[in-house]
Length: 236
Image (cartoon, rainbow, N blue to C red):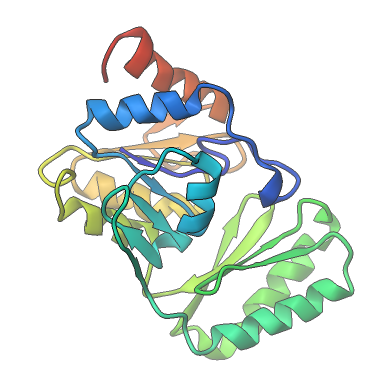
């Protein structure tokens, strides 16, 4: 089971720091992790350190920054991809853009960057155009992804599909039928990776056209579905 976090397990908030983990979710994830023999991973655009902070004291296998960070086991070492050389200049340009546009938030994650416009949706199109122009000279290294009320810039060498493949080559994930649950464009590679392995892709939310074969309307509905599987019915 591969689970995106924002917009999937957790409801969006005005800023990334304001998201909340609902009561009972840690117990559900812990039970799911145990029922599946450890084969549960968080696959997120967030840094793994942020995931650990959010879900403390629970730790899970994780892929952070769309796969730029990978942790095979709950307390294992984090394997990090080096940030592309061009990224620092792109981040500086985006910070300059945000400085004159109130409400735009630049989240520098070291190996990737997310620019949030939830507080200033009027800048969406300008931001998207600016971001694509900022990486225009470095498209072999960098990629722009549209997220929900945000734009991500990440290395082309990493994505959530590659992260799934990395886990699927390792115990306890190998030899199992994978399920990937996500909500937006940043999850498409994860959807494709599990379908390629005869697994199941589940899209949460209605913010974009449905592309995965399975659909769950809201993060709250996903949490209820997980609860029904691991608590109410005693297994998955």
